[in-house]
Image (cartoon, rainbow, N blue to C red; front, side, top):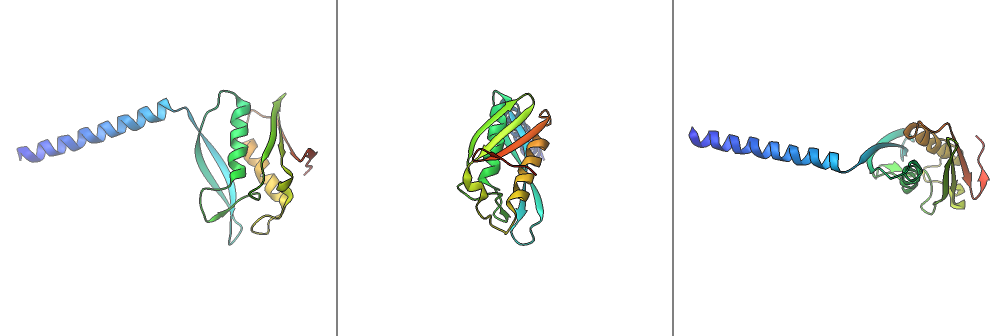
Length: 149
């Protein structure tokens, strides 16, 4: 009886210690939750993926990190990327509450899953608006040419 109480107390202490470490980890790392929208390969259904990203010192760097992560594609192997692998963020500016994002020319190449490029650009714009509500507008460019939806 005495031994089992000691064993249960030790397990509880380990659990409290583990919880304390997890809480300290969560507080000490300045993370922010970001949502990304991708499509399934088979049915083409939209799926939202959550990621915890480190908070950057400025909102503009946060936005750059978000768009860069969206261009890298989903974590899950069941989901298709929005753009081809060669697509990069050429520049991003945040001025007067408007986000200007310029993507490389490979953003217009055919996308896996037979989706329209404009549909993928709309998904990227929606994701930016959802994750950065302080922005009044989003303007996307491909190789310096503005995309008008």
